[in-house]
Length: 410
Ligand code: AMP
Image (cartoon, rainbow, N blue to C red; front, side, top):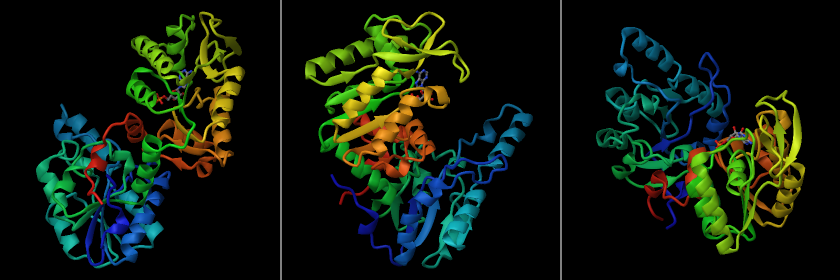
């Protein structure tokens, strides 16, 4: 069922409670190191202001600990100090710079201080609440907190895709006690691309899966095998597949618990006539180190003391050919240890191919894959780069995400 969009809401004179993802990377002094996530929310923020609404913004930042749970006074003091850096004041400073003033930061999430500030708002005003995770009720999806948050606004907008897979008070609970709930521009774009992949993909549809462990991606693999024409598997998880095929993998990453999963996936692909591409060769190194010795090894040729850290040249060629045949590609997980230059070749080549293929709709999962394409300066050339690591993975698992399910139907 289609969900309500921010543009479907009448925001004139209304208090709009908006969940944003201001969980930004910070410098040691707490200042914002990368404001991408704040900029990403500007379109929705601007929409509300341009249409005469008042904005109450909320977000979490980092993972604050609860000082009341400290086991000693010393630990308590440490937690309080660490949490100081996670207050939203630095974020408010950056936001103020981006929207040209007019941002009031309150030092609480709910309570009299917040209510007073909200009551004094005029159209165009912005209030930024304190870090939602300072309140123990947030991650518990506490009903009392949800109600208090809901009472602050007339309508709710979700623009924090990175948090929609969590049923928290600010992402799910709150929607049960407020007027209408709609998707902001960011979330709407995520929903548009993922529902296209899941419900109505351009074919051939290819999925590229990489990353470290098979066990983390069991459900994704299984769901993708119901969906795609071609499944490409690279990265650390490919060695578990090689092991399942009976090849020696030396010191490469092995996920013992994933061997059976790999075997079943290969059977399922075969039964369904889905093309499953696994590495034929691999770049091996004698240490997990950017300065290690490296060479290329074929299947079954990885010796003890050596580990596979990137796909090899033949594999890259085969993966590229399959991608070129596709109309739509969804990619989750680097195909090598891209953080180290000698093992980044495969990941970079796939990123470049997608970026330079206007005929392919490219949907890039959040987390490491998004980080890789951003690092190569190619994010802008992809059809869609997801802003949520966990959320994009759960989308591909075919799960219902609580923060999306909670939005009002159109
Ligand atoms: P994930 O969080 O499961 O998507 O895993 C991402 C991580 O997998 C990245 O940090 C990569 O460096 C790592 N990775 C990719 N290929 C390999 C490999 N062959 N061996 C070990 N780690 C890998």
